[in-house]
Amino acid sequence: MLDHIDTGYEGKFDFPAHNQPPTLTYLLASVPRAGSTYFSHALWRTGCLGAPLEYLNFEPAGPYGFASASPPAQHELWRSVLRRRCSPNGVFGLKAFPTQLQALERTNPPLLQDVLETILPRGRPRRIVYLRRRDRVAQAVSYARATITGIWRKEQESAGPAAVDYSQERIEAAERGIAFQQAVWDRMFNDLRIDPLAIWHEDVLADPDAAAQQVAAYIGTAIDPAAAVQIPLIRKQSRGDAGEWMECYAPSRHSE
Image (cartoon, rainbow, N blue to C red; front, side):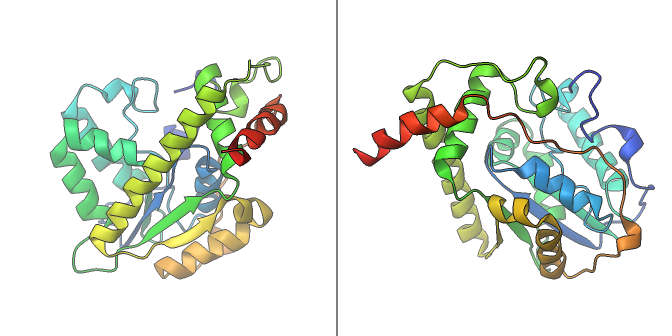
């Protein structure tokens, strides 16, 4: 967790306890730097689409890093968020990256099985919202710079964006990482025979309410404006010298 910053995982943002299993579930599938934090909060803010955050992020620096080495604690956290993060209309959403599911497959297979049975239940409609970004160069540059600086959120910028030395190798590695994770999702969708709802980051930025309505229609529920909730705002990070990075990198791509 980030000290002194409301990230959305804090208990004060919980919905009233929901003591029955969710009636509608969906997976918000994405890859790094595709705007998934912004979109997840746009969905959550409706008060009708759950609160689809990274409840399987047990990395040491992640929101549930304290449970990184404890499968029992991870299981208890999962049971807890099912109660606390299900919106009053019975909708529960989970945001995940492929690496989080792969980590569970290695370290806590029983929890992964429980998660998949809950989010993608057999014998019922399986719903996956797949968020991507059209501008792959901007995405790769953003990913590369974040891995160098360790700054993933606006709130981490203390004195404005730091200048970062350009690295062709880091951008190429970021592109490979994004492509790999997208390929993992594609295999999963194919294996499950699921045609996900495709949402683009650029469209979310242009009209987040319309994107939320798309998700509501896809999972089979309605958005009630009176149900909207107050949650932390997600502010756009400063670009810094990202534009210069993109200008340097774009010619190299076209020359291949």
